[in-house]
Image (cartoon, rainbow, N blue to C red; front, top):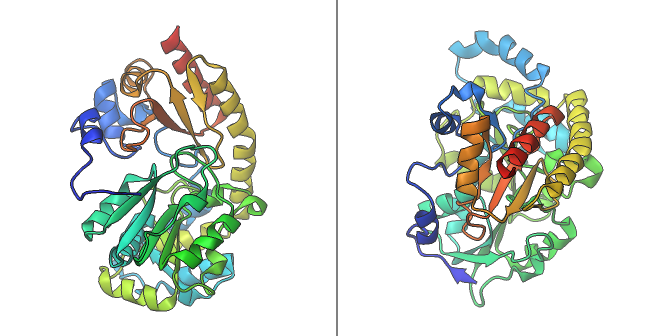
Length: 370
């Protein structure tokens, strides 16, 4: 394992212009590059459900507008009850947050208190941001074969108290780790944080969530997002499932009323929207393999199989020029992978969108290679 310095990664900085965004979904940046309105951009860079927001979410917002003159319930009782019913876990083990990102920040504060934090890479850049904010000692383990990564390689450093930060399904590769492969890690690490932001895109019988182990393992934390599946990234809503004592500590650290009234109301209803959930699973089951096969048929593109609502694609050409051309000629935004140091400039990630939108992407990619 390699311990990262606190300073920025020079290799990434050399490849990335100062104004290039670290995250997907930056439509203002893309529109400036494409010389068009942000609304004209077809965004494949942010892995958001293209079918939403569901009607139940819009109705909840409209119904709740009159309550904006009052502060939210600081305990988020109704929201926690809804999450509790959905997962079959006590509300005491649930803490809603201002998106999964806020909760990952507090998880990283706990991780940083340990001697070292094992971070499988490539990894979401916000993990490193949050860990460095609390001066964590980061030990990276590269998942060298992105299609068949072996979690048994993740071992704590000898004679140290170590934590582990893992996401499942894995971003950016889309690989799904079996929960039984995660179980041995709970015996090896003092704190295990599993980011399951994309888990709900899998059919219930295919999910490999470990959240029902939290009551048994007080050193396990699971973080979930409600904004990707329900297409509400601008609303910011997520939740953590962890031991009540840990969540009480986090509550003392953070600002009061982290979740706004509209987000809390939406969270209560979308978890009960079984029709929208089934519609999403049906869409993804049909659309993902079709897009994968069409990408594989294009020259110089090699998509990796994935379980989530996005695909990682390897290309023989440098991605930033490809990204720029797609924007300027077709107003299509793909996610470069420059922020993932292990991937560099020969990979891009795309969200899976509707069949018609996916076809527009395929035509744009084919046009650039003709």
